[in-house]
Image 1: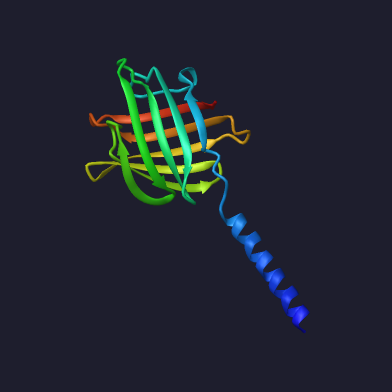
Image 2: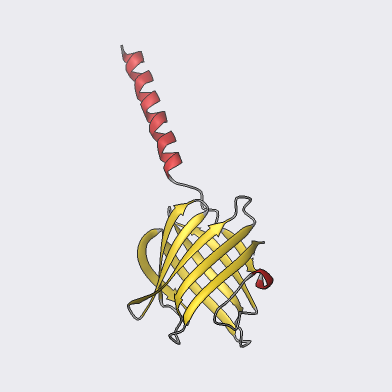
Length: 159
């Protein structure tokens, strides 16, 4: 009887571990990404001259995000964010158009982001990593710091 109880316990424990492993999806956003200016569109402009994202895993369900680049006026940019995929707003430092960002992971390849500035929601972004994992595309809508409507498609290539 003890042997049967042990086997049953081992089976249940293994099943629980397997279930837990499948509930945490991999995050295909992790990595270093370089903006492909030629494939990106910005309205209104001017388009940034360059941007490189470094996205690292943070905790069980979050990211450390650093973006460095050169804006359309030739000024260097540096943005940082540490956020979980829980839909809550986290400080977004360095971005002139938003000071808070909330991420919600849809699956391993898709994330929804919302931005705020001074407590007011200013935009929505859908982020999709291609099935082959080589391209990351952001579709952004909202309002920038000047109050202008934005509609951007930003394409990044995995490095």
